[in-house]
Length: 218
Image (tube, rainbow, N blue to C red; front, side):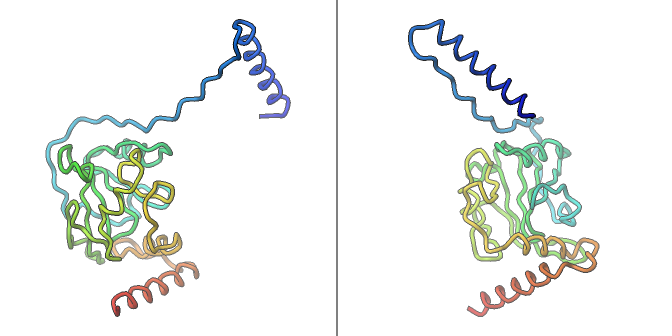
C-alpha cells in the first residue's frame, strides 16, 4: 500500500468513527476483530484401518511444510496440508501422517481410536535402505529416542493444534537444532542420497552422534 493509499484508508476509518459518534450520545465503541478460526477439513468417516511398516516411505517423498513432512494414507492429502499450513490450527483428517525425523511418526487413526491422543497413534521406526520396521507403536506407551514419552510431550500443544508440536505451539523443546533436523532428514537411508551435505549439517550429525554416545554411556 502506498503512503497516499494509507492516508485515504485512515481518513475513511476516521470518518466512520465520527459518523457513529454523531448518532449517539455516548462514546463510540469499536468491536475488536474476531480471532481467526482453526481450519475445518470435513471428510467422510473412514472404516477402521491399521497402518503397516510399508506405509512409511522416504520422508522427503512426503509433502514438506516448514520443517516437517505430512502425507495421508487415505487420500486426504489436500485436507492434511491445509491444516498443517494453517497458522490457526485445525483438526487433522483421518489417515494424516506427520513426521519430523525418519524414525518417529504420528498417524491420525479413525475416530474413536483413542480419546487421550485425539486419535493419533505414535510409532518408533527402524529405518534402513530396505525400508521401515515398526519397533513400537501405540498411544501413551511410546517413548522417543531421547527417552521422552511421545504423548507426554505432544499433549502440551495448544488445543487448536491437535497435538502437533512446533516452536510456538506450547510443547517442550526437543534437543535437536533445525540444522540437526535437516541433516537427519537428508540422510534418511530409504531416500536417494543427498550429495555433498553442507558442512553445517555434517557438523550437526557429528554432534548428534556424540550426544547419543554420551547418553548411552550414562
